[in-house]
Length: 108
Image (cartoon, rainbow, N blue to C red; front, top):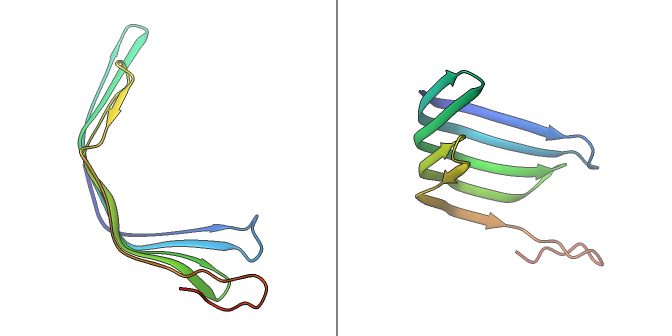
């Protein structure tokens, strides 16, 4: 199964101002095996990989968090065995902007 070049946006309106999460390019690849045997259901995911490109978290007009790439490779999941694993987890090209409360000066 492959999802490629998908854009994702999410908004958390419980925060003020609302938090916005955007990923310009999302790629998800995995192998799925499922089996129903009587009352037991078996699900296995293998060769899973997820990549999020141009990831941003914004609050109002500010974008304090940016990542060029975030993802994992060699992921697996076995429902019956209750096991999950990731071969490699990565984050590249990060930018974080911090603001002091007292005088609103940026300390990035």
